[in-house]
Amino acid sequence: MHRLALASTIAAAGLAASATSASAFFNLLFGPPPAQEHYYRNDPDAEVQISPVPREVVTFRGYAPGTIVVSTSERRLYFVLEGGKAIRYGIGVGRPGFEWSGVKTVSRKAEWPDWTPPPQMLKRRPDLPRFMEGGEDNPLGARALYLGGSLYRIHGSNEPNTIGQAVSSGCIRMTNDDVVDLYDRVRVGTKVVVLR
Image (cartoon, rainbow, N blue to C red; front, side):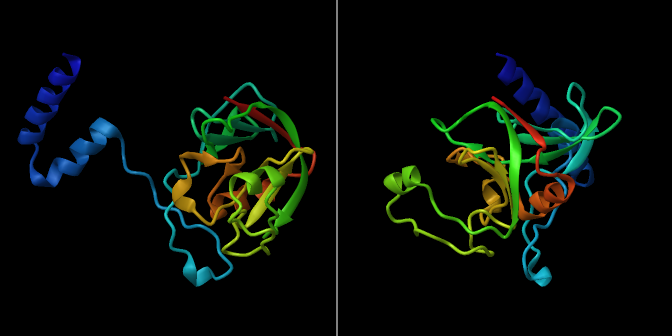
């Protein structure tokens, strides 16, 4: 019933809207489209990927400055700043069966990290390479923040179109541009809170 009423209202308003104001009407109903962001690559001339979620500073309270807070349900990562603010990034998260929550610390940082799939992943995907050197084709992307002694990382991605989705084996994915920005703000020992 409510959907029918909403659809009628939208249809009526849509008919009343002129061609020049259609995008303004859409923005009023659904908000403005996300801003474009390019993701970092070795070749600066190749920065053409659009991030589905723009990086932005938002109001955020309840955690100490310098903390990383991951909200897997929102598919957002927050880097807490002074003054009740945080930088909010879009992320990809673990697919069903690979979700997790808890508190970790950044135990290591790496630029253009190499990737060795863990045995559990190779068991599920025997087609994967046993080792992949860091670079643009590497699934860990431009940077990686290793979380404690776990297999989980916050890392870039060679599949930026997966940001905003639940597709990983538990790692937190970011666009390469965003992970480079976060990497430069974070130190080893940073607290990471992962919420479901």
